[in-house]
Amino acid sequence: MYKVIMIIINIIGFLIFTNLNTNNVEIIHSAPKEIPIGKDIEVNLIINKDNFSGPGRLKLDLSQANGILVKENMNDESSFSFKENEVLFIWHDLPNEKNIVLSYTIIAQENTSGKKKISGEFSFIKDNEKKKLKVPELIFKVNPKLISEEKIHKNKSSTNSVRSIEKIKSGYLITVKTYIENHKGFARVKEELPPNFTAEAIETAGSVFKNIDGYVKFIWTSIPDSNSEVIVKYKISNIKGLDSNFTISGVFSSEDLIMKGYNSGIEIPKTEYDPFKEETSLKLVSKNLEENIVTYKDTDEIINKTSLPKVIDDKGLKNIISAKKVNNSIDYKVQILAGHRIISNKKISNFYNYKGEYSLESHNGWIKYTVGSNAEYSKARDSRNELNNYDFPGPFVTAYNYGERISVQEALILTSQNWVP
Image (cartoon, rainbow, N blue to C red; front, side, top):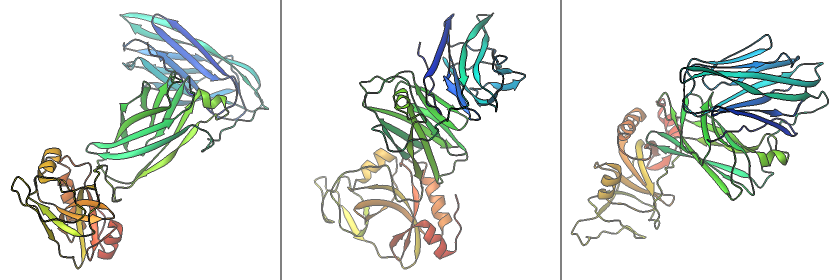
């Protein structure tokens, strides 16, 4: 059975890991060994179970933890309550997953000190029988002299993470690659999602994936020390169906980093997605073509020349590349592809299911494929939406002033038009 383990954050010190394994259900209850006064300290409680569901309840007893307040953190589809030294997580129907990941926050009030204990029990229905298991006791010390170190270290470790965002047909593909050295033990990637987005796992690298309360989490019990890098991928989708700016931030934490004093982990630098940037995920490698604006049609072969040729290929099909007149006003188009090589109509039809007309332009060393020509941004937007029905990696509106490419925002200002999502 796979195990899940938490990432301990917010404090320097040794950790408590206690577990109970009975009737194929294992419970892990973990927290720092010592906590300071007045700081939010995360406690993690993991229930590893078989794939059964049904009603369930987890009750925690704080009668021997006077002066400790509890706040909800991550409930994994349960309802939470804290009253009169008792914490309850209640499920009408337990999640089907093997791993239930819970966390709550404890806070030591002023004038609190000494050892504290939190105990409890987990009850559930399995095979039409009510079962009850003790939750491992959590024993810790409140140390008024302890100062919590909460700073996330930046770029001070050999461990580092990078993130990329790629627009795909059904949303955005997020890839997080973490470079590690001689790591072992537990680890976690935690990503904060932008508002109005949902997420699903694409590649977990052996971790347990959770999408809860606006965060994506990949949690490992143990990362093999032979690994030099860990790659996880997930897809996010805007529930409103909009293609707009957003930012993702995150943290990589591990047992190894905590032992080295990086108690809050290593920051994964923020990544911003801007739909107006003239970028596409399509990567076609070839030679650059001359700076020019051309129209391309009726070709069944790839043209790979340093100039713009007029040839008849061996199949007898004409390659027509004709100069396009420069526009004399603001013009909106839709870019569908970009690369370093011209590809044929046939390949565009096969790969992207598109048989319509398009234009080519050579811009900053790239061959950019555009569709349409509109004086109004809204009409170009409508054209972009129609092109989403094809398999392009992410059509977007572009703008030109007297034939020179400019930003859409600048074009909207020049034409006194409003942006429409």
